[in-house]
Image: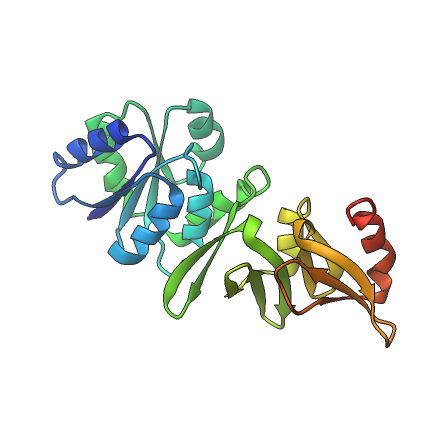
Length: 245
């Protein structure tokens, strides 16, 4: 069983690696200091289990678990935390294992024995139920067989096209298999619906213009192609942008 250790504190990672060395048939596949590093290492190492801290900079454990849930063959996740309110309130009723720090060898061994029975449905259920309280700070998607992680703050707009949504960001574009309505619900504070198939990031809005043929267009900083505004949403868009332009 290959295990990836994820914790922002070096002493905590060292202790977990020492404990793993005492568990038969376990090997440390690598270590990461935050969720973003963990996703990149998962791509390279394909571990069976993640020992995942909850409170970390850059990307916390809950968001990391949500991204893992979207993978075709996600690893089992064992949360490690110093905060018992996370373990009791968020995970006690689910098959996802958790360990309170300081982690004990016997509890770790038992959790690893149970980890093999975790499945994607269970992980998805937990991460979906924490969605409201834990808005993602990153978008995760595959591009040319590689896993890419894009900070939400770099996303200029989401454009829906049939089954997929194009994530237009400052470094390029990605395709994700998510519903635009769900993205609007999650990121509604930072994004504005301008069309039935488009959300734009408020921070990148440069202007609201009217074309010669009477269509309204949103122009975004750093993006050459404007985004069309549907006629029925023009009043709403104007109201939301009032004082911003």
